[in-house]
Length: 422
DNA sequence: TCTGGGGTCCTAGGACCC
DNA sequence: TCTGGGGTCCTAGGACCC
Image (cartoon, chains in turn green, blue, purple):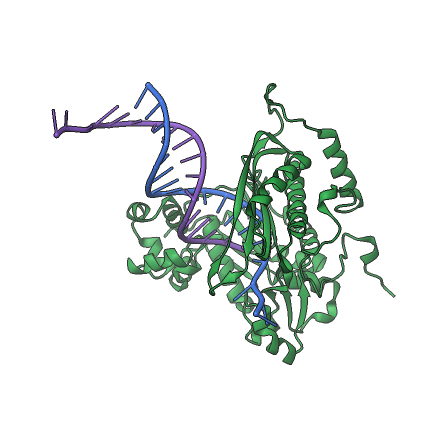
């Protein structure tokens, strides 16, 4: 195997949500801390101390409650506003150290080093210490000639944090072979549980086996994605690196309710809220949508079965006007709500998304659009906070609001929550 | 009793067209 | 009785990611 240039890096924040909470609460270092999902349902982030107690990722809160209480584990409801804000700052720092950054998720970003001839392992160490110094974020960095190999490298950097000092480079052939032999197929990026089962039936157990497999055969047996993964493991880049996030092709907003709901007015208020959020996202990316889906989740029956009614409404023309969608949603909801049924979750999805710039409306079908009104609405709400001005149908009862019993202050986005030093 | 939310891409199959 | 071949578009569903 030849030595390849480590063009890509994956930088991932350890226990991101917990690290964000600790940033403003240094007293939490060394203590077990967890962060819960929306509605305080599942555990979605754990500090090392919490992991050491045997608590596992994605466990429902109630299942871990006794161990949490026994060991005085500190719990937070999720504060996505805060995490999103820290995520931006994280990317700003990365941008200072490479030629391109592509944010992959809130807590991890790919970097590209085109034409960097210096020792990238050393550079990665500089990035780590700077993130710690400026944002007190602990990170691990994986380097490799492809994104998939950078992902594998990151996995090792995290697993052997102390011996690797949080940085692993898989462009070195011997290290690559050693690492790929230890990675079981389900751990490879893009290979989940279902595909793993089938690969194992083919006698492919490790990333090294997959690396050596015949990619044409596996392309036929699986899909082009499998072929790409194999080539990426061999050091041949097949995945795009894009700095600018592409506009979304579908926009979704949904929430479980804090308690089951059965009245039409409560459900209407909830879906109106989701509609409003979806339309904001739509206008934010300068798009129009031509169809909207309303869906509900009923109560679970007979352990597994969910009643999941939904309805999709086509508009005569794409729009980004919240009021047009609100009217459609109200019509649609009437068709799917059954009297006497109770529901635990509702959501809205927008589809048929097109770019609003350069869109030619149909002069015969024209839907009345009010771009100035929408622009003013967004401007006011961006400046003074979400829903400062809103449509009446969003209501005020908020019976659908989710549980969030232990949310931390909005340190970075609300004046009254700014940290005070006394 | 209590189990999140928001996306992407790919494929298969049906409808339809010439 | 005999019944082509190729293409496009749309949708549903599956698998994956964090």
